[in-house]
Structure formats: C-alpha cells, structure tokens
Amino acid sequence: MKTACIAFAQGCPRSRLDAALLMKYFRVNQWGLTNNLREADMILVATCGFTAEHEDKSINFLAIAERKKKPDARIVAFGCLPGINRQRIVDEFDIKIDTVTRSAFGELDRMTNAEIPIEQVKVPNDLSLYNDYLSKSFSKLEKLVINYENPIVLARDIRDKIREKYAARNNGKAGVFYLRIATGCNGLCTYCGIKNATGALKSKPLDDVMNEFREGLAQGYTDFRLIAEDVGAYGQDNGTNIICLLRELFNNNEHFTLDFADFSPKWLVRYFPGLFNIFTRNKKRLGVLGLPVQSGSEKVLGLMKREYSAEDTRKCLSGLQKAAPDLRLDTHVLIGFPGEDEADFGDTLNYIRDIPFNQIFVYKYSDRPGAQSVGFPNKISEKVKRERIRRIEKGLTRSDLFIDYNC
Image 1 (cartoon, rainbow, N blue to C red):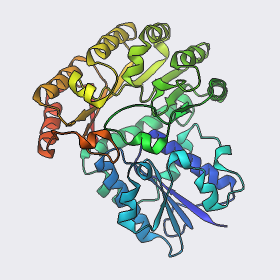
Image 2: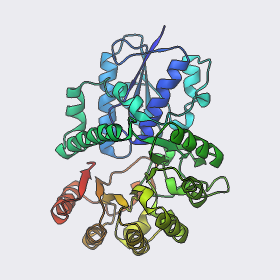
Image 3: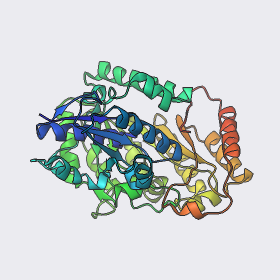
C-alpha cells in the first residue's frame, strides 16, 4: 500500500479544510497515511502566499520535506502559493516539487491514479477530527524556528488550542462545524494574489448548504462557521445572495451560534438594511464577524479597490454594535500600502481605536506577483512599516483587545 503524508504547518481555515479533504481523498482511494516525512511515497505540503513573509515560511517547510523525503518520493505543494508564485517554487527546487492549486485539485487524480476523483469526496465539516494528524509532520522545533519568530504568534497558537479544548468540553463535540459555502473570489483588490490561486467565485447551491447545516444540527453541533474567500459574496454567481442564505439558516428554532469568517465590508454596506434586521432578530445566535477593513483611509481604500468607504463601514458597524452588543468583531489591517502617508496611517489608527474590535490582525504590505499594486509608485520602506506597527501596538491599549501581528 502506498502512503501519503499531508503536512500542515501554516495557513488559513480554508487551507486546513483542504488538508482535511486530502486526508479523506487518500483514504477512500486506499492509500495509507503517515505523519513521517521519511516514510511517505507522496508528501503534500500546505503553503501560503498571502504575504512575502508567509511565502518565505512555505519555502522553508518545503525545503524540510525535500531534505527528509525518500529518494523516490513525490512532493506536492498545495494551498495558495502555487497559484500566486509558482515560479518561486520552481526556482528554489529546480522543478523537483509538483504544484496544485485549489481550483485544480483534479490534477491529483492523475498523479495518484485515483479510482474515486476528488470532486466526489465531501469536504469535512469538523476539523478537530483531523487537527492532531495534520500538526505532526513537522517537529515542534521546526515549526518554532520557522513560524514563531514573533512571540505573539506563538501566544495566538496556544490560545487557539485552548479554545478548541474548551469548546469540546462544553459542547460535547470536538470543535466547530465548518460550512464551506463557496470557493474562489471575484474581488478587484489591487494588492491580493489569492484570487489567482482560487479561481472565480463558485457558490455552493443553497439547498446543499442547508442540508449540511441540518446534518450538523442533527449530530449535536451548536457552533457553526461560514467559510469562503469572501463569505459576503455568497450567491453573486448563482442568482442568490448572503441575505437569502442567512434567512434560511436562522429560520430554525434549534439552539446554535454562527460565526462569519472573511466577510468583506463591501457586502456589509451593500446589504446593511437586511443584515441589520437579521442580526437584530438573532443577536443571541451571533458569534464572531470577521470584517477585514484593511484601512481607515479613504484614499488608500480607493487605491486598493476595496469598493467601500471607511465612513460607510464606520456607520454600519456602529449600528450593528448597538443592535447586537454581544457580537464579536475581528478585522484585518494592512500597513504600508504604496502611497500610504502619515495622514492615511493616522486615519487607520483612529478608525481601529474608535471601533471596539475584539481582535485585530495586523500585517505589512508586500508585493504579490500579478497584483496591480506591484507597479504602484511611492512604496513604503520596511523601516516605516515596522515603526507604524509599533505605534499601533502602543496606541491600542484596551485589555479586551488581541492584536495578531502576521509579519
């Protein structure tokens, strides 16, 4: 029996779901699974190309796999890096490593001579059933050296593990029930390369989402999380929208809470009257709303092509928090976008001071291959980016705020 090793050391929940899907895929195709990089016939390494820093870490993990593998073993890089900067992988490893993007997972069927194609394998809903396996391919020391140069990132990882154990103890289930409602992205953001890896938006049919949701309720889950590259964009490709989905989900008398990962402020503004009504009626069923505002500067948001204004999002968030005060808000902030001057940074700092976010993910701008912003003038130096991030840390002192520096 051939064996596969699915190695995961960094990445978003979407990438972790893909890693869990790969585990199921190899199992149903009669492959064995191993945590040992030295034993596997095929090693699949999760990669991330969100920023230059994430890309560098992915290259380091691929190098470990390449060094440890059997002479005849095959390495496949998956995740978003193959779609964002495949050439970096080719240059670093002289085409010794295969690559596959999320939108082209079907290529694995050819690589493995699969009897059951990956498109017929259902994406898992409960990551807690897979996390223990996925965390063991790289040693703790290897992950510590590569991933945790910043002690705050280490603190975040420990915090997340504690939360998972707490959820399992209190719910009788080992974690959150993930609902992957869409793949791909139709956004116009000038700085992002992720859409080059994921392809165009493809929303799951509404009936399929609801069937999965009911399955989760029937199995006793009470914590649900909507997952997509942009949750708010759901349905824009198939004649429905996020309002229709939320009405269906909340039209249920069962006890549950719902989290929203990566909900673009564009959709909050566009659908605010409907969202306000839904959130107000279901305020006790709301968990976390992840809303990546990226900047508080109108000029910078325009250069980014985020398709919303800071003022509009400020008004919407203020209204939401009055209507649903227990709603937890997370956001992403991008520092050092080309042309971001001192006034623009001040607008961003004031914005995140004024809105009572529970968690802020801060990261530095970096050029991503194929992104429009690569050619933008007035690039910001690394020194200035670091100095601005330090000012965010000093300027936000609320005890209930967690700042995560992805840089």
